Image (cartoon, rainbow, N blue to C red):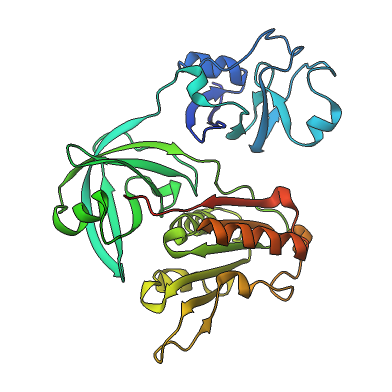
Length: 339
């Protein structure tokens, strides 16, 4: 009996599709069997229309023409879905939106299982569902809707994909906003919501030989927590991680106890913009913490950034100046998901 492999396709619009394939099926054939018709033309490895980038996993690329897939593209991790056959679970990135294929993203009904204030104006929200769990990659997000009360709002998972029996999020509560007001005044354990996804091209890539640097601002810490949980759950040793985490005020920081459980594998550096007499740590912007002593192997570093757009832009510039390859800097510009 052929092995079954999990195939995850991430599209240009951030939407994600999941299906299974046997070792004897091509990715295209397995997708078609699942109801997903990927873009293709010749289906013979000659046109290149079904080209995708292999972000994770191993496969047999099959019989392809040099015109459709050059040697350089193969070295960079590209394949043709009509010819490639999996030899492990795969994560593939396609250069067009899932909406082009007229495929609906999965939606499940869920209910609130826990509500917990964890910092000034930050609420931990845990959801559960009787439906099949939504598959996702560490770092991705979903849209949450409260029927009749709050239209869709985007929040990143804070739990590992390995534990998708629950869905955990950290929500910044604004002074006014539909989701913020509902969480403060209307939400309770058992409240029903709708969850759609997963979405996002910001997700954990296979770790290289060097270290991982994570830079988070505010509730942009949530996807980093998901990534750390996932890294710690793997059979391979957890790589060294440097986590730089900043907020406007000390009272807005959260997650320290959870991060400290990883011991020396995760080096946590916290900073606040506005310190006071009770704050003993660094003050300034989180990007002020970036220096060459933290990045001893800049060329082999993978960087993950999640926070406000100015933070992302400043971090990209500084990381590039320190020698981190632009192709290994992954970012999600995180704005309050409310208005």
